Image 1 (cartoon, rainbow, N blue to C red):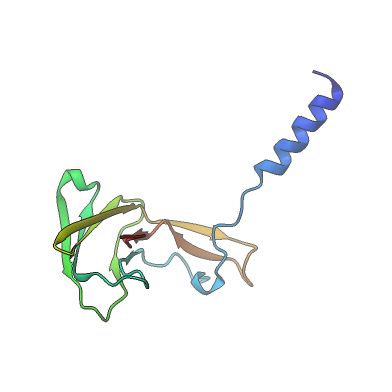
Image 2 (cartoon, rainbow, N blue to C red):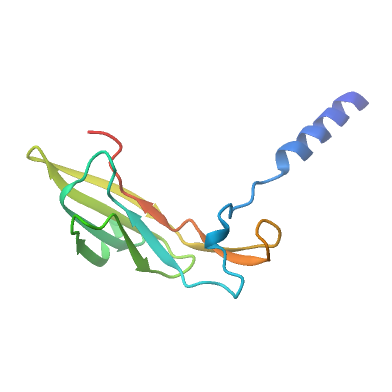
Length: 139
């Protein structure tokens, strides 16, 4: 390989190897230590509000069948926040009826914690991969 080819490869490697910061939102940054893990379960799309939705939270994959909890949702709530453990897999289903058809959506997450020294005003811890998005995209 020529010197030019090596220089171009090295330059591309340096440019493409930089990863974006995982935080981005300093309001969810905790300088005092690792925050408790929480799962955020989104189920209501602003364009469509499911009628009588039921959210079932599972430990691990849905196929394992280990149900942690079932939530019958009131219409006034737009999301759920549930205590969780870091680095543990969770999955969930949202079941509801639309025009006499049963619709089920699924999602999975594994909450993780991270540390960022430079994005916010002071170094802090943050939680990521903790959102279970069960919202229906379209009907």
